[in-house]
Length: 450
Image (cartoon, rainbow, N blue to C red; front, side, top):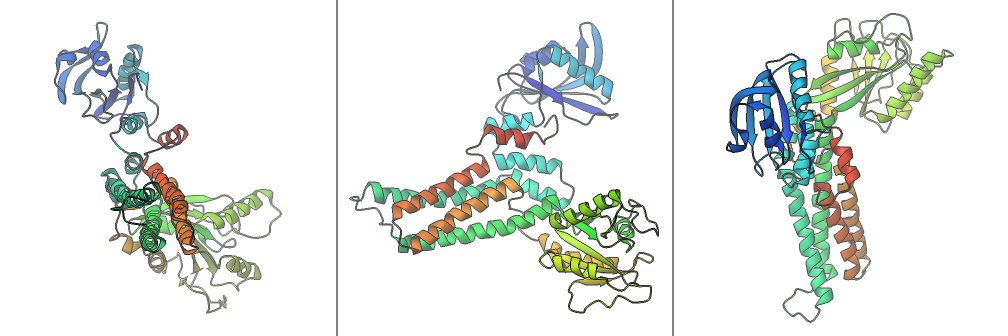
């Protein structure tokens, strides 16, 4: 953290402007050494200056240089941003000159990592920056902004304050039993407080399921035997000829993926190989992949052929899907009905891909099944990644242990252990405590320059 880092903050390619960002104690000094214009060391903070980048006597580019002095910067360090003409050659040349003059090439996400380590942002805000950059829908953008503004952190901090107050009262009772002004904390007083906190945490975790959907979208697998029209359905849904369609059974040998946005939520749709017994090694690998996707997808669209009698193999697959989110799409309803599908099955949609009849019904069924329209009006103040949710679930487990202990009449001083652990886990969630390995894992997925 004592060195000065630099990298290109904009996408490489032909464009009007590229930005090279520098951060560290020597940022202004190093930039000044290659800048032909005002003396940047004497310039006020948050000002922009016109001039040229030079290598010895050679002019490299005409630029605007922004000076931002610590601590009121993104990293709380001195920052310089060189705005040059867009283009790979010019941008890389300026970066090369900076590196030869004492800068180090920044690692992915290192600017944001420094912002976190220097106390400008917490861990939730840091993760939200990455989420905002990668947002694919307006809903995911709104949720990322909510995390970035600190409102989610504030909610967790308020929860921790309640835990701290309970913990402090218990400690006073244990350490200073003779202190007359202290409220004596009994199991009867403690139980309703912990129950309220547990309900609050339960609500946070329920909202987090919506958060995961908003952020990551829904993973949808098109499953069924060969030649029922799965590839045609994929192409129709994403409005693109992504999958090869023929009348030859088993055309799809590998998973073909496509995306669409439905009610502001990304659907990651996978067209799978037709499930059937086969001696063909390549096709068998595809079938195995299809079965794996069934276990990992949020929604299975099980496709049947309206013109064929339902097989025992299809019935067996349907039986394995009982505890999953499933929509049965009966394709080719423009042909004679031979299917004899049992009327007990729920979420059945009929349609065909010749006239695209039924596809709107299919979309509406997905919206209904996951309440996608209601996500629009829900509070975006929710956890949204596996790390955050896992820590919250562990914290809730501590609250549940505490409730169980109270009901068993266990001594108050033993309950303090679970309360303290719950407090610490939520502190880890917002980055009050952390491990270096965790930071490396989080920030390695950021783009260079952020």
